[in-house]
Amino acid sequence: FEGHHDARVAIHGADGRDFTGDYVGMVTPISAVRTDRGRLDNYTRDLAVTPDGDEIVCLVVGGESAALEFYPAPLTGPRRRRVPLATRFVQIVGWVGGHVYLEARGELLAVNLETTAVEAVEISVSGCIPYDFAIEPASEAIAFVASCDGRDDLMVRDLTASPSIQRLTDDAHVEMSPRWIAPGELAFLSNRAGHRTAWRMTLGDRVAEPIS
Image (cartoon, rainbow, N blue to C red; front, side):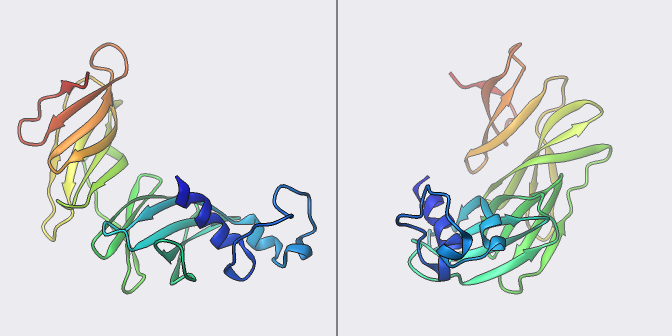
């Protein structure tokens, strides 16, 4: 991903400038590149782009902490804002409206871009542990895998004010890695053919079909 490299140098370069030149690939004293050890220890672990492509958010990790850093897209200007996070064990799930969603050890978090508040999104399925979230921006729905008594089933929750959870699978097969193909249609991996293969399903009929 071309922007991934650009995001890294924008974060790590001295005074926000690109980290280029003779120092790249060389063993060089920190003082020579005009930065500090704390900045060099940070790295960008994840990226997301707004649906309209106007802004990039970078998940920056350093030591035991992490933060979201927001830049214009393409990366032609300085950082716009920074949101510190309470844990480094997070990954970006997606960007919907005025929120960036994160997964933190099975918990779904919503970062309000206007207030920078970080709030937990309730994903409550009795006896199950949710994980592997995937957001569909157009319909504002989130698919996830729920581990229930040793079984891994697909479920969907909408992100509206009156949320509801829909169970898509309820069998002995192991489902994983849900990804949205289109609003109302998912692709996922499953062992239902005796080995791990790709399948698809629409939320309306909930019938799994192999992807050939």
